[in-house]
Amino acid sequence: MPRWVWLVGLVTTTPSAPPAATPDAAMLEAARRAERLAEHGPTVRGPSATGVIAVGAVLLTLAVPVIVFGERWWPGPVTVAVLGTVLAVRNWFVARRHHTLQPFRIATDERPFAVLDREQRQRTGRQITGREPVSADSAPLVRAFLQWQRRSSRAAAPGLVALGAVLVASAWGLALSSGDVWLLAFLIVVAVLIGAMGAVEARRAERVLRSLPDSSPSTDPATGPEA
Image (cartoon, rainbow, N blue to C red):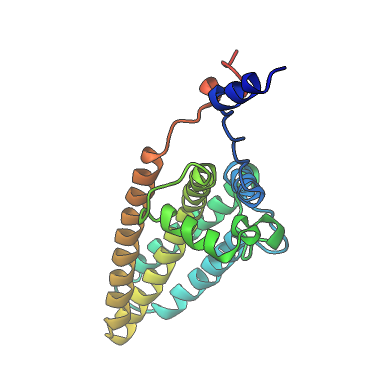
């Protein structure tokens, strides 16, 4: 082949596109762990937080009649405490049946952020809280993590409400017997603050989830349309 033909071909040939970068293995593993938590929840080893809350509610409820014994308005705190205990015990039975018991500690091999380095954890944390736009490589992790948070919040809410009711009933009983209402007022303020913070966090999470691209199975190019 003449040399000039080779030179012309070298100059006019369009260079091929560089190979696409493969997703980071750590991000993929973190997303896989978060998706498992969102679908199945964490593994409970030993006593669950849900069960301990139910036991604590029962013990506090047994103490309420003693606190208000002989008081004129004793049915009020006793009724609230009994209702809280019923809700706590029912929540424990429902959580056992639907595998939504809450553990005290999530095992290291189930934690999504355990496989990420410091920079990845900080960047993903800012994206989860809405302080930074979600990047394409972390979108699956952010979506699954927020879905897991929503699942955990829904599972924990009945138990926390039940425990709060029993605590308020106990403080109510102390207020009736001693005339000191500071503890009762403090618990009510704390409950209002926790409810407000929970509502703000829920709206923030929904806003971040709505900003993510749709990845439903019916439109996933890897699996094709759903049958």
